[in-house]
Image 1 (cartoon, rainbow, N blue to C red):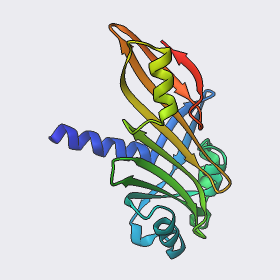
Image 2: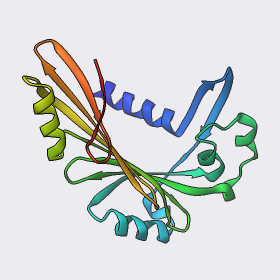
Image 3: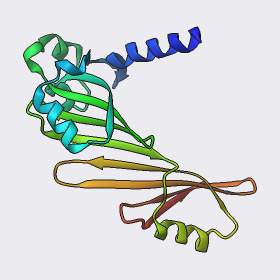
Image 4: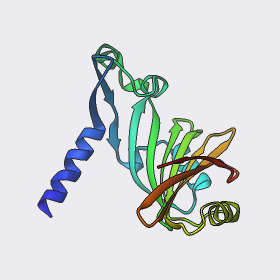
Length: 184
């Protein structure tokens, strides 16, 4: 149990102060873990409105400049940022049926983007039908639904792991359940 707790603490530390190598240059990301009560009321209200059945697990506050650069910020840029630049809130939330989501809001409570991962959820009928007809004798091992929600659109992709004996495949489907590709 102590090893598990230590692993969790190390992961949390790494997530909050990430240091990686990119293009032979050290890149730092600065995100601050904050109490949910420290979020602006506008963000709290939007979370309740957009995802009423989700439970808030963690809140990170990060600079807009970091987000815009896709988390690629040089050490010089990090030093130039001050507390006024922190105006995005990354919320880790979970659903009652087990889905995990990361939702990013600006300080005005506007949703920037949300990413959700559902595992072993109910597949649309056209995907199940396609698998049964195209991959006769194969069994479904697991599936993942990856959903990206933005103010202007929602996209989702399906990944389904199947097998027949020792032959294993991963199948990918688009937002409408149309087959995209297969990987061995």
